[in-house]
Picture (cartoon, rainbow, N blue to C red):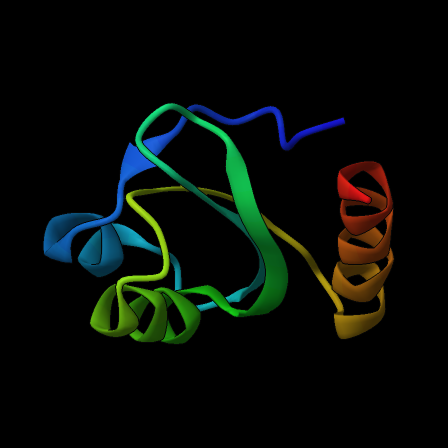
Length: 81
C-alpha cells in the first residue's frame, strides 16, 4: 500500500517545508508512479533527491524511530517488487 499522503512537486519550496525529522519517503514520476522508497532525515534526503533529479514528485510520512522507518520501508518496497 502506498503512503497515504498526497504527492507534492519535488522542488526547492517542498524541500524547505519538509520536516527535519526521521521518516519514509516515496519518489514518483510525473504520472504518480513510485520510483523509489527510502528513509532518513526527510529534509536531507529530499535535498539529495532534488539535486540528483531522482523524481518529479514526493510524499512522506514521519516516524519516531529508525526501526519504525526501516519496517515501513520494507513494507513499501515489498509491494513494489
